[in-house]
Image (tube, rainbow over the protein chains, first blue to last red):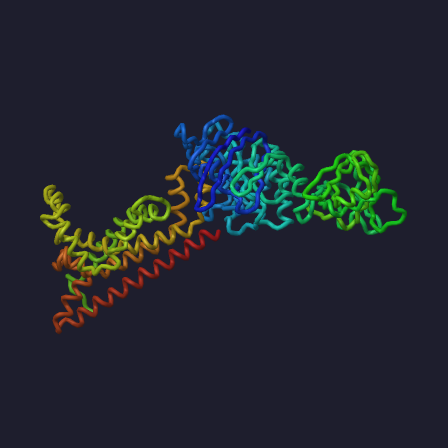
Length: 351
Length: 228
């Protein structure tokens, strides 16, 4: 998917002025609330008209002031998943799901309802009214409805923001499996760094109505390390733990990670803040932290006075964060060997 | 309770006039409410004032304007007269009078219904491939049903009670244009007809109660349906 946008839109005193080109299947639009992300989404989907400019999707002109083109939203084939599920309250779950499918031309019907209903496990919900669904169920139906419209592009406008943590991580696997299975490129709009890391490969960063950066989730997380309350988030998918003295022992490359709050069986995703990793120049003999690894410094970067240290542990990467004076005192350089200590309670279970 | 054959005619005529006026005004009311709620255009305020004007004007004034418009020398009257369709002093004039007076009530209720629809539902529908008229028929119309119903019952009730404008454009001809209020007016001016007037008043109350009950029942049914 290739999206080229050069557009301007004034709304009251707010001016959105975006000039960017992105290619890829999993694209993020990152910015704080009020930065213009939603306006941008409206311009791309055709729900709002730019004052000036042009928008191209895969070389097809969606909007152009010079060429006088303005494709109506229903002809752009860009489906939206909103923050609130926005299911049609007067229709059943099934009718909601098929709303876009029925309006999709036969030659564009690539995804069949049965396949999708199975993938999203919607079978038990089909005959129910939408009012009686839980928040997570609603969002799953909304996702299914958008996918069944067989869009060329899926816009997800903070689709997880209205859900609590537990539900959020129930939905993420669905979002991922749907996009992988049906190969629908998407724009994922959010202000959550973690969602960006989980859902996107490429990011447009929006601030005050302007696109200030085109970057990757990792680069953005590094840049925001100092200002973000949790620093850089290391995301660790771990599986098949063994119980050990009341802790969960996970295999992590050739090492064992001890985690206090694990999941009895199966896969789990953990978050580890860069600030929870303590670095030692020499092996500390006795230490209360349950995890201690020997590692080498693979890379170093700066984020507003803080130093990010990319540690390589048996082929795995972790980012630790220290202040500049600590880096100088320990004389850390790329290639130096360090010991990293992590408390078992520092791992936060996400899903 | 005593009803003369003329009273029975008046009751049927009242119902016929109110029903026709409501049915006739409904599509226009819906279209106008849609324009006001969802479209941006110049002169919207003027349109809103015009639509609401009959609500604040005395019905007699409206009747008089209608008479000027529909009378033999009026803009519309001339055209209709030439094509052989008499309006003034027929039941059709009563329909037009009722429709004009009740129209703002209808538009207001439908508007309220439409304004309560979340804008994102409409956006979702459009982005799922529905053209504007498709969204209008499959999302906006069903979701403003409550407003449409409330507006229709209000307008129907208002039409049943229409007096001022009707007496000017349709007159008070027993058996032809005499509706319940006009008949009561006739009876009330002669002391010997108190019982007859009272009987028609009771019929009025009865019809109003039926309208309200039907309105409530339909509303409940709609609520149940949306809570499925």
